[in-house]
Length: 357
Ligand code: X2X
Image (cartoon, rainbow, N blue to C red; front, side):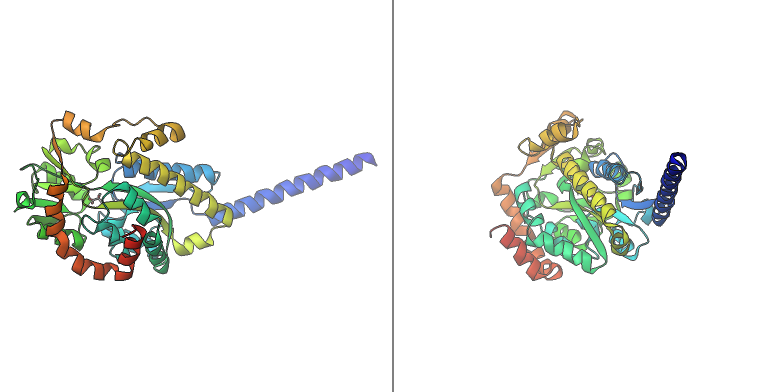
């Protein structure tokens, strides 16, 4: 009798185990084998390192159920970096970690970060990102069927070139500067008297190498890994604008995920964002980013002082004085008239309020 009871128990336990396995595999079958992630840049740039971190954290936090694969160098877009949010909105691509510059064709509000000399330091950037204007950008994404998950950062963009040490707008006369095909950038460099050349990132480094252009603008997290000093002798640090990154997902696909999967991916995005922001700011802030990398992520920064590093490679680096900066601010002011309308005056007002202006 006892025997029979035990046998029944074992059988019941076995049956339960089989049920669980079937249920688990049914659930696993609901997930794709691979979730494709668009990444504009290569894996060595800080942004690319952040993409890899996100994929690793998603695998870890979902117990391997969700497999995000980064496709570097805008491979999914054949280099057309400005199409990423359109493709994620359509569900052709599952997710992305992309710059506000590249999402602005679909989300004009994202250009709030790119008004020249508007947000000129980390503190102001954080106020806007975490304030009402940042919220407006996220809401605009949701309205376009994109689920924003977390902020990361490309960084404050600096000017480099092979011809002249730029200290005044006059120094920029006729300089051929590669810019991304976001028209706000063309307008800004025209106002400065330069000759902006619109080029996808995928062609840009070859363009620097071959001298097709004289200069470019990008943050340290790009300039250090691509070894800009091989092509350009002069760097002007002017923090003229910043591009945060946003980790985002196709909305319909996101909404269909079970809650625990959403929570795990969201936690991965926040953690990868924190890590990547620290990479981008390392050696450029009050030391807190290097501390975060070391203490929270046990990560040793290969180039802990990017400015000293570029100088050690023979670059001349000049930080604009407040007086020099004033001339650039004045010269680029006309950009505001047109672009505040494009961004939406209410978003501009929100950003000003976030900054306490
Ligand atoms: O194209 C650029 O300059 C880059 C890599 O910074 C962006 O994608 C915005």
